[in-house]
Amino acid sequence: MAAQVGGETADHNPVPQRADAVPAYWSAVFAMTLCVFALIASEFMPVSLLTPIAGALRITEGMAGQGIAMSGAFAVLASLSISVLAAGVDRKTLLLGLTALMGLSGVLVAMAPGYVTYMAGRALIGVVIGGFWSLSAAVAMRLVPQREVPRALAVFNGGNALAMVLAAPLGAYLGAVIGWRGAFLCLVPVALIALLWQWHSLPAMPVRKRPVAAGGARSVFGLLRRPVVRLGMLAVGGLFMGQFVLFTYVRPFLETVTQVDVTTLSLILLMTGVAGVVGTALINAVLRQGFYRTLLGIPLLMAAIAVLLTALGARTGVVVGLLGAWGLIATAAPVGWWAWVARTLPEEAEAGGGLMVAVIQLSIALGATLGGLLFDSSGYQATFIASALILVCAAALALLTARAASVVAA
Image 1 (cartoon, rainbow, N blue to C red):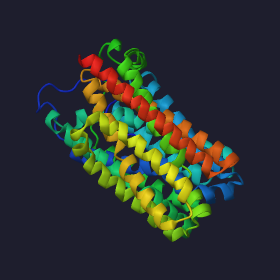
Image 2: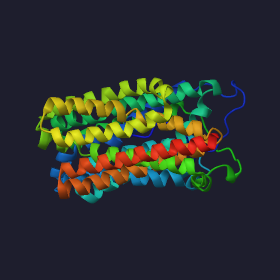
Image 3: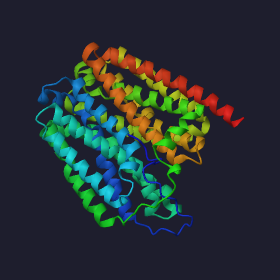
Image 4: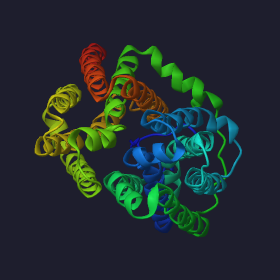
């Protein structure tokens, strides 16, 4: 939560000034979209497999959920450091390396004999997440003419949306049929196909030099000096932290509280994902009706759903409806905040987007960690109530962001 394509900090290549300055490498765009699909599926596959992972590795479900936190933490580090660590590396070579690392992560997790190896595999996928998303927008600018960049980014996001729909239910189904290790191994050939396709279709993309002041972690963090940016990023962080305090542990909740079988579990997760696709399609129209009202309302509605799940978790029909509403709202939320980046930082969208990637991944890591600690120590009620409280705080921060934006506009 996956992060949507919207900005980058790692590859500071200028956008071509002429619409025909770049030939169209659409095969490369689709190859990277397959990579996006495998990457997002790898990131969120543990959500639907916590119970069997915990049983096989002889750990608690909360500890298994820390795999989400581990990938998020390393994604933050990668998104902020890749511009320095890979400053002179051809972007094709870098993307191929990241894709290979994704395949290695799948193998490590699938073959993990214990908790340490499992977490090492999750750390590797975190590096890929941070590096890939930080590069994606700039690479799109070099693969297609300028007028086609929005279309290329939309194709990337199509892979993201498809993975969000399929990752959890497919993981639950494969886990029941071939085991959780087999489910992770199924992602390895997908990564290999993406690697070979990118190797064949991506052009060479040597780094173009530009002044250091124009990018990098220093300029990214410099944006936080502005109150509207600082408040907005805190609101984004609260939204994603509150979301993943709850959603990381939805499988054990459904199994132990709602008491559904694996088939029903898979269908519920699929329904949640499909609702998310619908929400993503509708969110732009809602934003046009009231931009900041929408950013404020989303976390409030999610908080209400978290409270209702706590009170009515034993009623299967109610839970299905609530999780469908959760998917509809939560999956669409990042679209609104990426639009906020473009609106608030029109001249610094790359740096703002890179900062957003870091904030989102850090918040996912913190949310999964806090949720795991609460789930193991106090059960689902405390976990879901904590999610609701954090989401209410996110709504308050969205309101403060709206007020700060109006001051800037004035």
